[in-house]
Length: 266
Length: 288
Image (tube, rainbow over all chains, first blue to last red; front, side, top):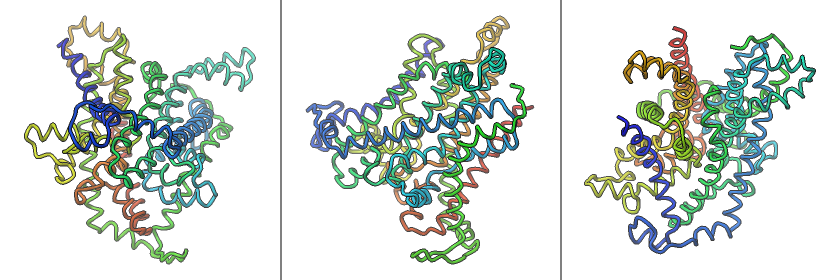
């Protein structure tokens, strides 16, 4: 029984790593080697695919674009979700429960349903092909999620904290920024993680709302596949690089994931 | 539970969220509703059609098939991912460096862009250059996911299990961490078997996170688009054409706005209904 305990997570992690290994493996091969022979590791080790990506602006600007709208989205989502989550966790007001449920229903809306109307909406207000358009459209599912997560964390903070602060003479903004926000730092970390995650991985809306100037890296990849067809090495290198920002974010919030999840509702 | 005070001014704190989400949700939704009752021949000319598109979609075999495939897919991945996720969360280390390694590595698939997931599995599973394809053919299966619908399904389901089981694991693990050590000590003194510990201590504590995990997986599996689209393109034939893929084919491929809009609304209502049923059932369980 004791041996079984470490075996299951290990096998699972191996299963997770296999496709990733294959992608990384491909990214260091030449096109000839990929198509010509089957090798478990690169025989003619090459970094040419990576050089191509870092020297060609159509490739590396894709990363800049993606990171830009993801960052804008995370900041917007957290800024508006913090006061709203506070209101939901501390006060009762007309229609609060209905509003909360309505917010969550937006998390259920399939992006495919909204792709075309979004295109028309953002074109009509002149935001088509801008970072802010993608960031705003991702708010559709990220704000409800952020409110949901933060509300869970805030409800875990006893109301006595608020009351003591007021007795000590803090004004509301002072209390909110100096006492309350540090108290739910873990929750903000988890919410930021989820906002980053869902905005970074989403492609359908990001692709629909951009053409050239704000084209995300993931969309750059799909176009290259369809036109070039055979550049699997390049595709793999681009794919490998999209894993890197995610890995960084996980590393930074790793303690929050472990401890934070337990405190919050998610 | 926090004792909430009644304060109507709290609305002001909610306003920014309301404005942003309403802008993104209500205007596009009204556009869809608008299209769903009209016929267009381009040039911004619209004609009232009433509920004709809805009747068409409800009767169309194509929609029934896509919905059927979608339901089967969702059922399959829920049946695999939830028990597997619970099992892995139970066997994960509770302290030490192992926790960090497990969490970081397991969360990795969640942060890979969806089309990269599809492309990665494509490269991984191709019969001629992929590791999985080579291995399965090597042990004697006639594996080719681009030709054979059965293997296409196996590959799409395996991809989804690879992609999303970690979410269930992370949530359940968080639920397990909230159990105080005293519970385990007490159960040891009482001589409880590991099944009893699971049934009467761990499972009740995980109920809440399991509800969230189930709901999230249900919603997200119904929205699945990019990964199967990149992996199989909905084929071979229509065998892996799920609702989203079919919808995008109708809306952006054929530009049939009316039927696509009607289909969108039916699709959205199906997701809402399923989530509501599941949510109500689980909440009723909780109060009992």
